[in-house]
Image 1 (cartoon, helix red, strand yellow):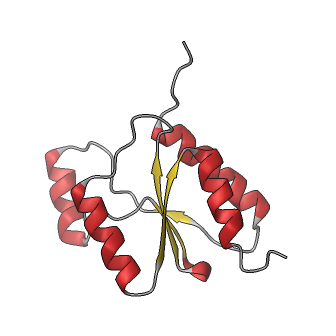
Image 2: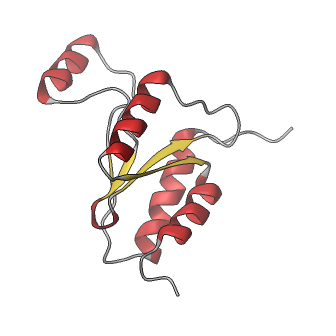
Length: 114
């Protein structure tokens, strides 16, 4: 039986590929998803961390990336709400089930692709 890689592993592989493939284009993570101590969670919340925001952002392309595992990854209601909001203000949101899916979707969005 093949082990399903974690969302962290999928995201790490995708970010590494993106940075090598699109060197001048910046991508960064939104640190919303980890389990934290209650005091840390409260501190981050008052600093502006909000549940449901997609995992990654590519500012030059106005693209948000929601990473999920290849199997078992589910978009929550609060994530879907954020996705709808971002799309309503003209942003692009992709939901990627694994790094391979993320790479394919990003290639399709590359503004410099032939």
